[in-house]
Image (cartoon, rainbow, N blue to C red):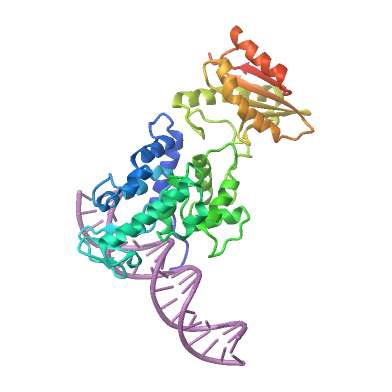
Length: 368
DNA sequence: CCTCTTCTGAAAGTCCGTCC
DNA sequence: GGACGGACTTTCAGAAGAGG
């Protein structure tokens, strides 16, 4: 077929929609961490060690391990539709004919290499599954490459148990592109674990695994045209919509709204005083950056109702942002909250100012 | 022997009919 | 309309074969 490349499959679009929903609807209970915790509570290693075939794969049963990995954790990285049920190693047929080239009995279909008998084959698959989990728990990812379970499923399982030390992207093509982008020369012998290592090594400190995955996926997901250089965090993204929720960890929807309102208001104030060209929004993950004469001022906005808490939350972040700035420039740091410092909070700030050699200050933006 | 080509099987990826 | 699952297609590495 000529051409013009096939666009995203519905599955992949669905995947992306889910991901962005997950990031934007922070008030929902389904933060990725909740989903991950939920999965790990349901399927600790001990339970997998005792798993039966019925608990592993079944028809019309959302409680199975494979359902959990494929569908109930879809927001953490989709493997749906990429290899059908074959990726599980063994699946239960739903009235369909035995599958050519595979071993079949009256109920199940599985890869011949696992054995001729259903039970032998399943215990083989189970052994591999436990291997994957053990390797993942201990961070021994390179050993996972050789475990004979289809890649797509294998690495999703590995991700779930990896304590977020793997990036949940599983399509070989996409992985290959990302690795190439980061300078790894990829050929058919390049292992997934090697690519994963490159991804992890390139994860910005400011992003968690999930946020980084969303960013990579937005940039590299299969589509008609390669989006050369979609917006990167280095670019000023202009005024932030207060409805447009960007990255963030665990903060609530309300908190996020407040954060954006403060950020926009401060941005407008700075532009009014210094001009638009001096003010950058979300540059290098910094909420606002003011470059004026020989001084760079970083503003980290926090939405907590107490100035001291804002300072506590922002301190680590803003110092990390500051350390990579041009050392020949003067650097000022501002932590920005909604409310002024209360008298009993002032000693906290004074203590930091006295004991750390950074030009750190606090300001508040009145929203009323 | 060595190198290049062809063959082959497994894995990966796509398409599409069925069912709900 | 979406999810599922099976048939079909493509890709790729290794084996086998052909030719020098």
